[in-house]
Length: 302
Image (cartoon, rainbow, N blue to C red; front, side):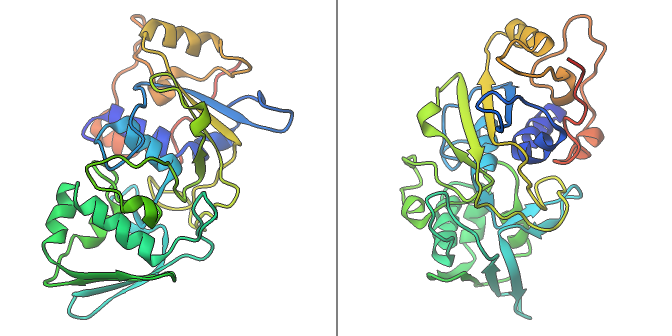
């Protein structure tokens, strides 16, 4: 996340639902279906977000999964899946209650037990999670919306850890999947996020397809980087990977995809500038301002 390109890639993937609201895409799957097609910089091969630190996998996970907390554009953690929480005066007990109407893509409600199992798997792989695990006395969660983290000693970075956006974010998945050994990949891609992954259409190294999760209930707050309401305004998203930069640039310039609209390649930096381009890599300060609601806002004309 240290370079502008990386932050832009994150914003594109994590906020397709915001990005799509400006009318990009094509009605290729039916008269009333809106499809957004993106040429991605890297191909997607690993689907388990706890298995690798690859940005392509992390971006994919932001489409499908959700997190308990999320960072805003000022790097402050805010509740995301969590509806309410409290911290004991001695800062040793954190009590959480999930938002209403949270469902996994298989139709099952999100429970406290799912959160606890997911956090345990994350702690086995992530460096911050491993540090947090050393001060945890107990984590409890049942079949309702509540779960609790009890610490042996105060850990000021707990909420920031639950809200981290990269390498590795603590995505929440069903308990039955989260119980998979942390050093083996899960065999299904089932989250509670704004998009569902279409496994039948997945072509590793070429294409990944997502469809709108009609059961997803976004937060009421406006989006701010990874936090806030994720309002989906398209029915289908297709990630296309073209390994030849010249082919990718040509497709972006000519909109050669079926029914696709032309987008400015510099708006989301999915391909490098052409030799004649004067565009410059964004500065770090510009990258920090690149939040989910501002990336890719200007489509060019057909």
